[in-house]
Amino acid sequence: MSYSQSLWGHSQELLTGNNSGLTGWNITDCELILGQGEECFSLAVQRLFSWKAHRYAGVHVVESDSIVELKFWGTRSYCKILKRVETPHRALLIYGTLAQHVECGEETFEVSIDRNGEVKAHIVAFSKPAQWWARWGQFIVRVIQLRITAKYLKGLKA
Image (cartoon, rainbow, N blue to C red):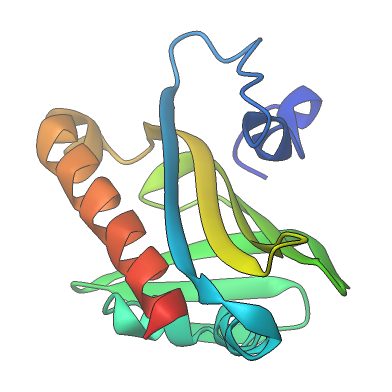
């Protein structure tokens, strides 16, 4: 992993608004209501775990065991899947960056259905630019990161 072991899994805490220990990190916290009902929930979960939401955002994904290669705009970034959970009311995917990733940090994707049948997607992350060129152009990298996150959310609904 390209960040401190003490932070492994911490992006999941961001789902509850707990960002303690993340001073100096960029925090991403985006949500989207996807629709209503079990069918909507099942489709969103399938889109999450099959990487369709990533492809919708223009990110090509190659998964091998727990390692994921993300290809975007000529870059290759590697992540390790830290957690993958599916229950009748919630699906969760967490991955953390490995060396040579454009950024350093962790991201959590959650799809949930509440007792009223409302289906929601929630994506949270903490990150910092890792590569010299990402640090140099960090404003642009951050804008791209937020746009990709918005597209991930739309890809869970598409």
